[in-house]
Amino acid sequence: MRISIGMNLQSGPWGGGNQFGHSMRSYFEQRGWSVYFDLDEPDLDIIVLTEPRSNLNSSAYSFKDIMDYLRYKNEKAIVVHRINECDERKGTTDVNDFLIKANRCADHTVFISSFLHNLFVKKEIFPTTSSVILNGGNTDLFDREGVKKKAFTGSLKLVTHHWGANWLKGFDIYQRLDKMLSEKKWSDRVSFTYIGSLPEEFRFTNATYIAPLSGNDLATELRRHHIYLTASRNEPAGMHHIEGALCGLPLFYIESGALPEYCDGFGISFTPQNFEQKLQEMIKNFDHWTKIMPFYPHTADKMCSEYFSLFDNLMENKEKILARRKLFLKTGFSKKTLYYLKNITKGIKTSAKMILEQK
Image (cartoon, rainbow, N blue to C red):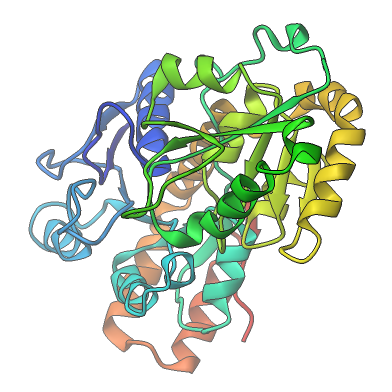
């Protein structure tokens, strides 16, 4: 089998999508698949559109490039669009509409959280079948080695890390915690480390700042701490909290976006209104949560196995999918057509959670 993943893999500290690409390549190559990151191969079986914005460094090709490939090289390739972004995450206004437009080249859509799925499906414009496959972290790097050594000695070390420096990553809460550490009642109980990029002219006063890290360096630094904090707003999924959890750190997370979906049962949630109260609760119950962390489920192997099952199922139903695509291209986006398209593909099932849009 031949699969192309539409991203330019980066080395060093980078965003969560980059980790997805590395994990997928490793998993599929180990199972005998040929993995490409371009559209030069004339006989691709699966094309995965991951970043349709061709102006970004991570994008290997756009939805227009895929349509040209189907038109001029290989009309039988199956196209999967993985959606991992939204306007709500960074306060932009053009991303959602662009993703909707790019989705017209897809035969199936994967959302990386139910939060993201619900955000887009409410618009009732997706003609494809869709599923939700949650992100997973690399357990070869992010593991619980040394976790038992982190005995509570009276001061708990909180940590977070972000590649992006957008304010909505949670800097209002991180700044608030930094100010709280000026008070002895907090500084005697907790400390805070921030790893990654900062907004322009933003500086911490009491927290420890570390420049962006990746790989073993990042995992080693995370394991030096006790609790993973994330205050990121409207996260489509994120990888930062997953990596912290896989290193054995209980999660202290804001109730926003997909974070509850990924963190529930493995820590304590908070809102801006009850942050201090919930932090006290986390300190009090820290030992309880550390015992649960070995069961955190969101690994790269689990994620990749669900994509593997999805791709295998799509290939088994290839003729139905191609017939559906042909009808769609011929008749367009009318509600009658969309209703028919959904009904003729109801037999397509996957081991991932399949969600068919309802009209």
